[in-house]
Length: 472
Image 1 (cartoon, helix red, strand yellow):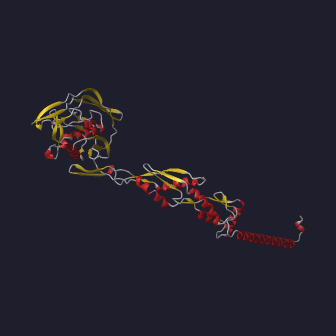
Image 2 (cartoon, rainbow, N blue to C red):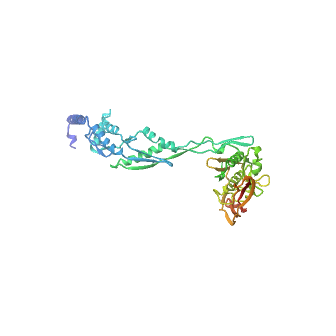
Image 3 (cartoon, helix red, strand yellow):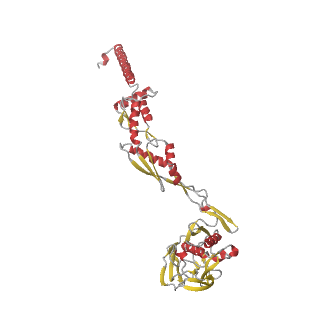
């Protein structure tokens, strides 16, 4: 009601006056704030604005040099931290200083100083006020030299990493002439390793004393370009059985014959359902086919004969067939216990061959081809046979040999030899105790027993024989 009594002209004058007064006050306040802002900026021209923190430390009013010095001192402790990189077969230890790890003092000093110093004045005002009233905390930044780390870990990588091996299968004239199973390679996962290093060292920055940490080196599998599955059409993909034997103290000719016979069985393919005959596969064993004379058992005597040592090959292949779970159709023990075959095995795990009457035979019932591979290590005097095919899930359990009874060897036999000078004695046969031995094998598939074997050996006691010279 009072407003109605005021003259409109008077009211307009009052309103205009208030407007100009308010405008002047706002402009004055703006200039006042701007003046204060300019003075504040000039006072902090070379200093970090108040309320700016780095990793929880207040650096307001400090110079960039102050920030650098602070973190450089912290880096002296960080540089003493030791990091052990542990790989499966080796390890390497480096220090933080060696890889240049620490706070990035230059970057942190620059970031702290640039708060409120952008090209946008309103943004600067906002950040300066925010820092002043609420504080702005910058997260720490770290640096290290990847090149130095790579250099320090080069030997570890060399000893840890392996290249993948491509599968190889060359089939010529009914025989495999070159064969290699594919093998996965391995490599150090450097991106993951560097992340683990960074995370562990960041955690250590809170420790004021030198510490030692261990980082397990992450390994990644490197797949070959050519795998077992796509290299051949015979189903030769994996090892299904291995047999080994050693032949320490063999004479030179015996070692030669073992290597020759093993090489002639290497690369043979056994078709599904076929029966393998050792004698048939090996062929003629004589001087005409390259064999040398070494000791063999013939007519109850140990004598020099062509191909001595071939039974080491049949014994080793027999063991491979046993371990593969293949049906053994024919196997004969030796006449007496041969020391070679017990150097890495109990008695009774041998297989004698003597063509054409004594043979070793087994059947390929896997449903796939079987490849025979032999390795005669003449440096360590060890023979190995590997059988490759596709596994069908059979499980093989071979019991330890059981000696049922033993018979001592007879007293040595001395025989006169008119070809030797009188007084000369030469041993031509060596004694061995007789024994009855057996071992068993059980083969299961899908939880059911598919083969249950018992292999018997009846070794005769063997008499040592000496030739006594009678020649005048």
